[in-house]
Length: 275
Image 1 (cartoon, rainbow, N blue to C red):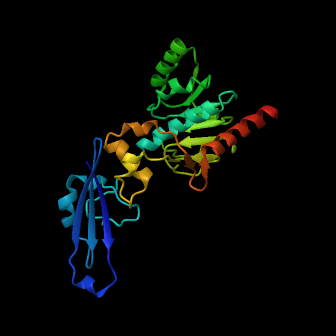
Image 2 (cartoon, rainbow, N blue to C red):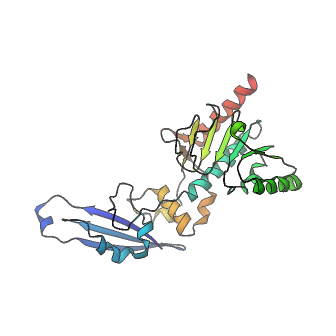
Image 3 (cartoon, helix red, strand yellow):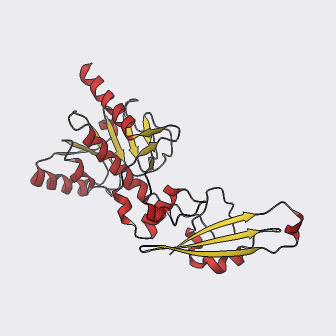
């Protein structure tokens, strides 16, 4: 069950003094996803979170709402946020780019401090050899290196420090970057969350795709489709969304298409070869 909350504040008109706040509830369904849409019509006074609570109940700490909706600090409510789908989209974007420039030699570094993305190396090995990995989880990646060598004849080089980033072409960091990476300014960084600090290179962390029509039909108009998709993926079992590949992506300032991102990466690789 997912719960979406919208608070409609009516400030104009004399009749608002004669009306009482009210709540509308609607249920929407798609496959295994169940969405409860709660709309609180607010005419005067403070928002009565206790009244809303009767309909939201256990969903109060992961409610779907617009980012600018004001939530009282003592209400117990928390806006749902998940980077699970975005991290998967980061991986899909990396594999798409590698397929698109497969004929060009490039250095790819996977940044995975906690060893959560070791399984990605099996797919990366189809397009780059060796694979460079920056991680503190030496045991996990030692086993992964042995498996790749035995099963695919591919090499995995585990890096003990960030020096492996100095000449990287593509950096894949599905997790949140907490510090600046020492990489070339013309490198490309793909990550699953907005970095905590500015990076030295173009850093993609926003991914957009066309939400399947069956899910778009139940998406409330006050929610961003990609935000809704993240909830479907994390809470409603819509795991098929994890196979989507971006049609557009962003770095917080500029929106890139698949073609423009592939073109920029190709230009970097070709300029290096020709220099």
